[in-house]
Length: 110
Image (cartoon, rainbow, N blue to C red; front, top):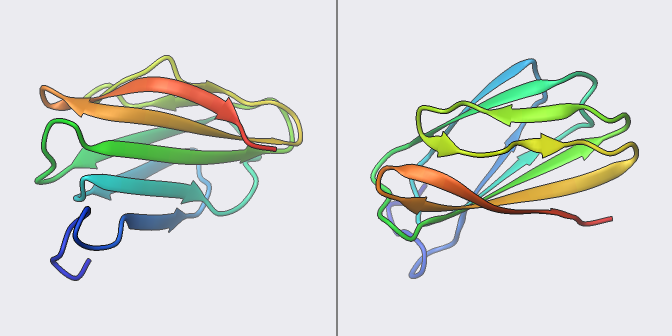
């Protein structure tokens, strides 16, 4: 990141390779994390926020070819996870409140 954070700078965008466990560090008030290839197994995503404030938004894009479940580590996230759907991409959205990202929705985008 260039030091200028959203809303005065661009949103933080990360492209992450799929794996059984994925670690993601976010440091902006608006972050978009995209799994850059189709999931081939169930996945756990551990989000670690640094320097974010209450009200920060996080979006995680999850593509699936088969119905794989995605769970989020509970240290910094309160979530029901994402239930994958064959040949669909879903986006989970979160808002940062009192030291945790709280899941607000999961939407299918294709």
